[in-house]
Image (cartoon, rainbow, N blue to C red):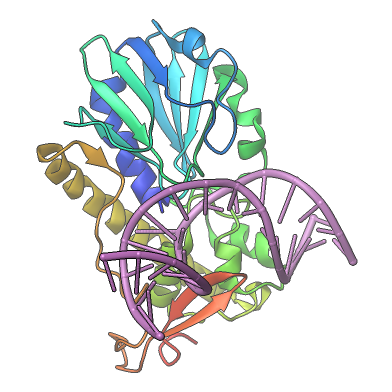
Length: 271
DNA sequence: CGGGCCACCTGGCGGC
DNA sequence: TGCCGCCAGGTGGCCC
């Protein structure tokens, strides 16, 4: 589930309870998620202080004072809860801090994973080596995208999901950004002109930024309930709205499959 | 290297 | 109510 805005929201939610705190306990309730937990993960991190939290693409990076970084990916169903009132099925990892906060990682499908790396070489782990630019950073501009897409014949929707081009966009925001830019998901990636790439970049930024803001408010709401983070509601324009009217033209939102994933779009509005 | 496809895993939902 | 097939927001690996 989680795309860049959800991951950013989780990172921001974890900061107050993790940054500057020391892990006094770390419990793994099983041997693996998608991959086995790193060797010595508990002994390496227990009693270590957390210096900083970062995000890269859909990954959360937790930097420890002993120069280790825990890289966390939430997969499709991973979430964190802060001081949940009761234990749940699929609570796989429990962090306890010196302030006695319990941070619980829950992941029913176990597509998530955790990797331990030296902080100085974390950019070199396989997940990051070929990762594309951050969509909200300065390196995403139409020249970059033109260069990355000029030899790509795949549909632009599929290209937006390619993390080696832009990091952090998933199925929902790919659909929403293309809708906002008025670009058909079926267009070949290398058929977009410069002005269309510029419009698409603006749309990506707007859609992600607005979702992050909505995540911020859900964070404040959820804090009052059970400390659960990662899943918040948006008002999507096209995602999961097949059969409903397009807000721009009134035509009917269509659902198709591209590269095995659902795509939702307005066949009239998106050219 | 590009592109297509499947596997990984559980749960929720609609149909019968 | 119960069973069954299908679907899900991601990624990695294998194949051509």
